[in-house]
Amino acid sequence: MLTGKVCIVTGGSRGIGKAISQVFAQNGATVYAIATREGSVEEWSEEFNKDVSGEVRSLYFDISDERAARDGVMQIKRACGYIDGLVNNAGVEFNELIGMISHDNMEKMFSVNVYGTINMLQMVSRIMGRQETGGSIVNITSMTALRGNKGQLVYSATKGAVISLTKSAAKELAEKKIRVNAIAPGLTNTDMMKQADPEKLQSRINNICMGHLAEPEDIAKACLFMVSDLSTYVSGQVLAVDGCTIM
Amino acid sequence: MDNLKKYNDVFCRVLNVNESVLNENFTFKAVPQWDSVAHLSLISELEDEFDVLFESDDILHYGSYLNGIEILKRYGVEF
Image 1: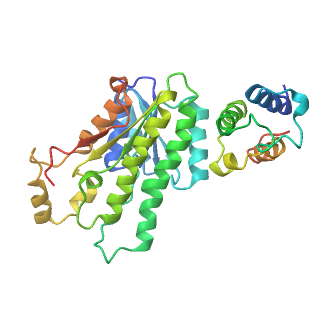
Image 2: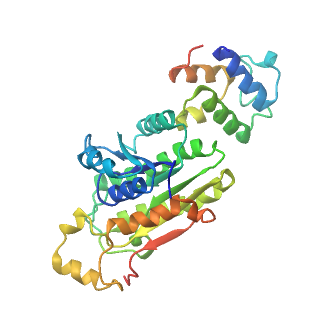
Image 3: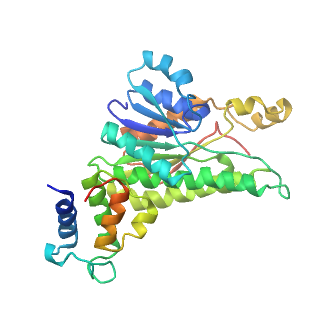
């Protein structure tokens, strides 16, 4: 579905980002998995690449650093000549109740979740805008942005910003054939979730009509739809991938 | 083609001017057709021509023909 396409996945070394990188490469894409910790992609990509039609390549930089983001994006453009897909998946999450919100954590979350997303969107859309075929940008938001959640005031605000910027970018970039959509995962079975209190987790799972957590691959498949040509007339949308959750 | 010629060609093409007017007085404020839409086209054409990607501050401050040369030099383009 993505044969010949070049895609970027931020936060691509683990969790949902890793699954997105893998599903894209399984579908024929050349994927640049962006991460900050050197070597974190190669820990699994070298073995993984042996069995897929596409390829996962690593690139390490901090998306909240505009210069680093620019250099990284240019490196991809120079290597491949074009960029078809961008998934802004990298995110930072600190859960703090009102009255205990740390300013440092607030800055970190806005810096990565919002400024980093905008940095990547700005850089990549300028390259996509010069391509005949345009491109597709997917921003990972969260169900907490749509519904709110205790202890997630700042996180939900950053993800709400992601939804807003998605809608504005979709309108501004449509004439350049660039589609911009958001995907809102519900509770997803990542390493972070394994550290959760089992009782509290079960009570949250009870609110999911499908009765279980999303797997990272469930989110990745929704991204595949958004980046592929199956969604050529879809832009400015927020797709919930939450197993029908009643929050 | 040398880089100055390429640079001038982009200005002439995007802003529809003759090369002879490209001098220290050729600025965003002084040239009526250099509006914000033309500015983004200019940036886009220059990025394509010189295979660079400007930072936002440089796009915002790309206010004159001469200043643009200095900015491009910082991106490794030789004049």
